[in-house]
Image (cartoon, rainbow, N blue to C red; front, side, top):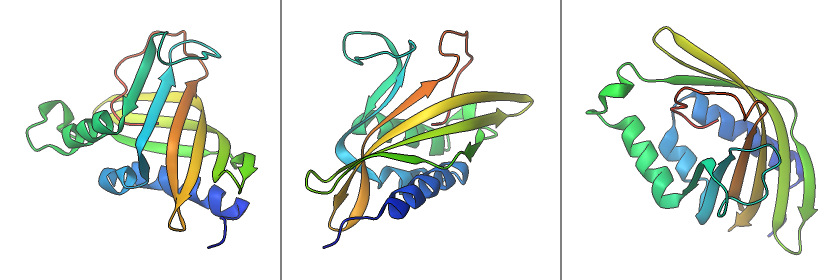
Length: 160
């Protein structure tokens, strides 16, 4: 089985953003390793999600609960549903270690989330730790750093 090319990794990042933009959250969940974490630090250059408060640090169980809430028929805070749009710079492949089956990408992007008359624009940097399982690329961990993490925010309903 061959390792993914750098272009395969970059295409994966674009495909993930498209799934989120199209509201295909269950497809998005299938991209994750069971032990993976989605982390959004609260502080600039935060080092540790376990000893410092974060916007979110969700494991697979919490991600599944989030998706169930977003897709639930009785989730009245999502009527109408929130929508999002990712505008990505071309991702960088910062680590490419075939022997360790570890690949790390870094993507600067603008993220827009809207619902009713409210819209918020976030400038973010997403770091994906990727691996492969049976030839398919999977997300081992994802970190999303907000450029203005020290600002006051309303609710971020979806996943940048």
